[in-house]
Length: 115
Image (cartoon, rainbow, N blue to C red):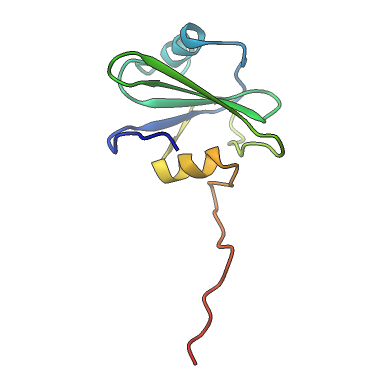
């Protein structure tokens, strides 16, 4: 997981993004479509059409950082909305990056009753 400061806000860009975009293209999307400042310290998450690739754009105080992750199997869970943003917690971002459904995480085990 990326070591983010606890004050970083995470925005998930709804809809599809052209994954050929790099630093400048994604920063322009943040400004024009999401109406946010790409140099404001928030982290922005984008997903492509196929759903197996995401890119994260973040201003770390010194420059823009671009992360990319591709799942070998499965798809990243994404909202159905075609536009706008969804705000995630850092825990939800961590689940998203692991390919877990961050909207409704389920326990993989149930505690047993004490005898």
